[in-house]
Length: 263
Ligand code: KIV
Image 1 (cartoon, rainbow, N blue to C red):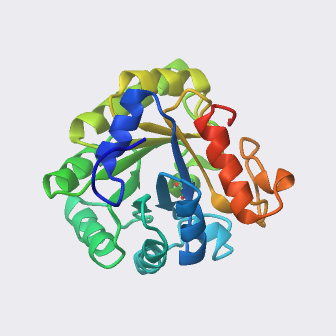
Image 2 (image 1 turned 90 degrees about the horizontal axis):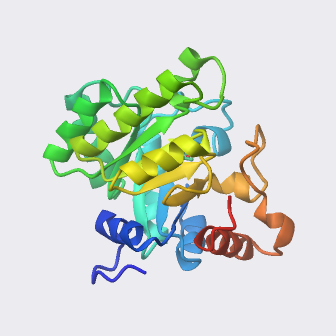
């Protein structure tokens, strides 16, 4: 367990957990009440994901989410938690240039109380990550399935299945770490590739639909509770099936991730 004296966990605590081989437990949240439940249940990292476009706003995809909406939900979540690291998504088209990314991140940190911002993609995003890190902003990368690129992708599907795309993803992961990213999320990636990337990087790799060998796991909270109204990915699990309370379901998830029983 993290030993630093700060009340809130930070990226160094997660690094220490990876070094010790302790699984990192992450979940999304969008308001203060759920944030408090997650925090009290031992979740290490709370992510205000732009998945709120689907589960809170009812859109089929995430590209409609605005920066001010992320700021609002981040601030709500920040008030509910006492320990967990707070990571907030930069929404679609809020980080197209390094300057825009800096301005958007400043709002997430100063108005939303984010401790770290998350952005999707490698390639041209690497320079943006460097720019944010140079300005003292911790960054979480996100590779694999990139929901903000859905109009380009055409459908939600597993990424990195062929050798060429797997090589590109590994190279992007290494480049993100070299650019100073503190954490990496891998979404819908073959487990072997996720294992290779997790072993290659020093920074913690958090998987969602990426197998059991990542350093930690994240799920969309509403999928875990079985209340998402739209599509629920096959890799998710409804923890309410075996729990009587929301807190019980979250605690079961925390325990299952820590002990390697999920995924
Ligand atoms: O938007 C989101 O909630 C996310 C996580 C589930 C990784 O990006």
